[in-house]
Image (cartoon, rainbow, N blue to C red; front, side):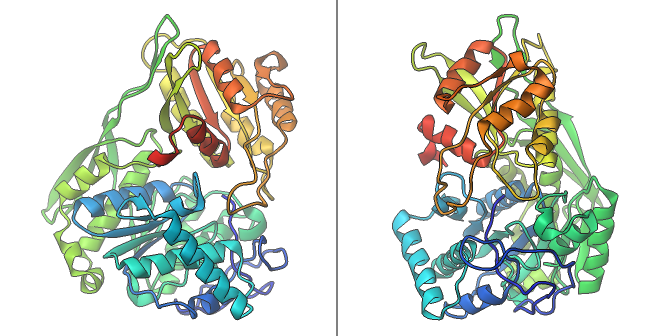
Length: 495
């Protein structure tokens, strides 16, 4: 992810409306100003002071990967239970306004532009010099306050304690949560798992639930628990989960790929529904084994909110959330652009071909995507001719193209290197890695004869070429390339 966060003087930790922050390791940061990443809360707090105060109870989520999936599941379950919701994610997929959803739908362009203009005008009037992400976040909070939902689900940007979203009054925080933590944005968050986990876990609020997702790296879980204790939060682990049935994809002997069906999952935990031992089963529509722990974390958050006295005191209807609400909500969850299946229709043949699109942007998410791909092409039926990737990468400080491509590619794969269209709306500083660079690195893994490229190669040409290779086509490497795919297929209004 690319975000613009608030400034903080180098080596300092700032106080906030959330109370004192757990000290986080100092990291080098660029100078402040619009278009710069600069962690801290000073400018955001000053900007929020010019707007109506927040009044909506909140679930606040930090982590490296999985935040969006967890927030989408929470939203779907809470809407199913009858709550009016707001959800804020970053980055956006198609356009900046789709980062904010009210009752599951993006706000209107007119309302978003009005709120954005107001936040920017206030920043200029008081000479705050807020960054683009701060202004966008303030605009989102302004729209949420106007809409008066029952509950808001807020995803941190790339940070945690010093993230621009972290200005929610502690008395409104129902729960905080931590998804999987990995080594990403090390130039700003620290170059160790412990440092990054400290930053992200420090959104925990005294006496509030702090739900910790399953951490593949032991040090992340241990650090999260330690920070939770220091901050006086109520740390809880995500529930255990099992996959009852699942389905890999299938590639017939004729080379026609058939996408997999949703997994049936079961969560079992002592006292889940208030009884000594109960379980919940649901068919999870979000693809991939990596969504199982994400769903586990979402279910854990919902369960602890409905039994936590502090949360129920803030929002009493939480006690009415049932297992049926959770089951139905999970099964209706949608999260566009993340391991999503789309139908590509060739301009000449008009033949429908399933393609997989995913915004995998770092080493961890690339590894997870590859695991899902392997479960599809290595499962039932004939394995087919392999996997064809259409790839574009964002040029991001502290992350190399190799770190994403090497976990993703296998010998025998085919690769088309392209560049996503720019500038990205609302984030003009984001640039693609040159496709020649992506092609050269890919060739070192799959072989030069398996890489297709050219000066005039675009997404449309790459999709048509990939369709002719047979097997599974995957569009990935940057969420901005995924957005281009939705636009090309005319699906942007379905986001």
